[in-house]
Image (cartoon, rainbow, N blue to C red; front, side, top):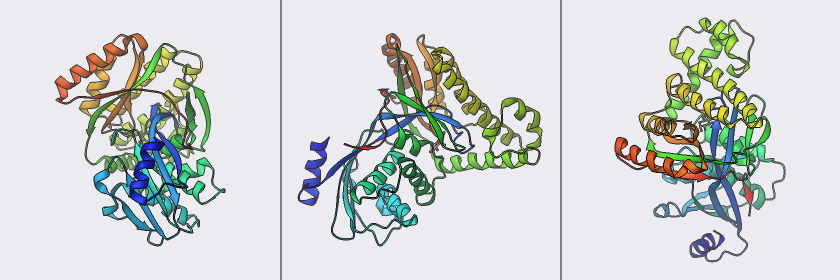
Length: 388
Ligand code: GLA
């Protein structure tokens, strides 16, 4: 990786002397979907797939961003004195947003920098290529400019802040937190109401995590996402008329069922039911995993999918197809849509001796039904963002 990025850096900027290399992962969420902005729990892990960057400080006020995945974009140039989101910057609005978010915190860069990236997170797949890039940029800035006042959690929060206020997606904290705090072989059991967390070893012994990319991304993803957030906020406000709670994550199913009539809109009841049931499933799933009960963990993943499909309505026919095909294969312990939804990927836990059949059967049937191929990734759980 260093070689490839160094060669490009030299070609673009004359020399690669004094450059430093960084890595930031993508993430997959095992269970706990659309709970992170409802004060609930999530259970994601960082991947060994991710984004690499070679970077170096400059003497002047300019910043140069170059992506080896988007060569035709060329070098994007911006100034540390003009931190505005511009359509022509394209992907570079993500790293630029981090420079902006640092400035919002009172941390102004003394000079510009050059940054060349290359990544292997499939684009638009819902595996958090943008959060990966955000945390990567945060890490680069702290290292290049000797900023020692920010923790990795701060870098996650800065990434989320920038995505919310610079890039216009009202996402929760899960993605950036996972990318910043990931740990090899472990998933993160994160309570999004207070950011307390535990690392849980993911020991699947005779099984692996397989991500299947539907390679569809339906339009209006961000606006639908924001709409779900609003529906949950409205449901919460209705419940707060009767209950002293801070978030939907404060409820269990019994209390929810007792008080749900306080919510008058039936769609909001569905959305809130998902937020509450998914949080409870996540807590249960982590308990099952700790007990070594992978089979219960898988069943909870399946229930999560059904709830996301029926109550939360963030799945789509293509990902439903992937998941239903997976469920029918012996040796599949669990399978569900993962990430924000409306396309993207499914995550499945598959026994080692069923992996070939899984890829073959799901792959063929998906192509026949949907008309294009799905991509399969047998993934490893890796560390959070770090310098190499
Ligand atoms: C996207 C958001 C996350 C989270 C998931 C759904 O990935 O960025 O904050 O809300 O969707 O669980």
